[in-house]
Amino acid sequence: MTDIRVRAERPSDMQAIDVVNISAFEGDAEAQLVSELRNSPGYIPELSLVAEYRNRLVGHVMLTRINLLRDSQSFDMLALGPMSVVPSQAQRGIGAILLQQAVAEAEKMGFGAIAEVGQTEYYKRHGFKPLTDFGLTHNLKGCDAATTVMELKPGWLAGGGKLVFPEPFKAVCEIAA
Image (tube, rainbow, N blue to C red; front, top):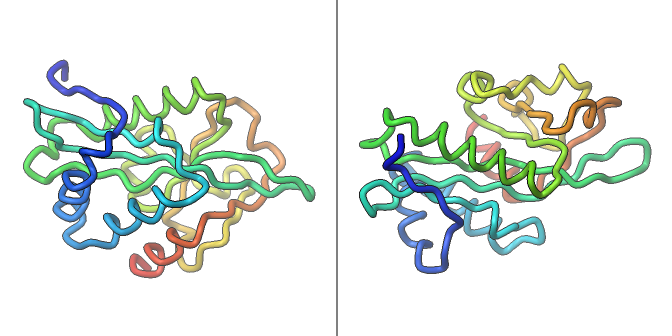
């Protein structure tokens, strides 16, 4: 859709982003997650994107830094989430547009992979694959089947490892389980 505009969030967007997340998820857990991630060391302002339609904020996606542990080494990669679109606009392809832009920005910044916890069927349609395809595990309880990854640099996930999500993701994962 050419009438959807995607840009980095601004401080003036915070309340509208909360409204988008609360309406999309029918609760405040994801809005709380966004707030906690903004205040974490993994927050990257350029990777918290909003979608506008007719000058109204209708979607949001956030990518934050997480760690991949492999062979006693730690590598930076990204976690996607949450991603939300207001229900009244859900069939306009806004989520796909946000996801494409987030992936493009992550690639430009040189990240090797993105992990997501949540809507696996949706994300698989957009190139994400199960953890087991890459020999990966993670530190979240009860979310193995709900976690997928996208390799941005071919071969970057070869050798597997353990994804370490920050504490805020654990709370949301426990709610979803």
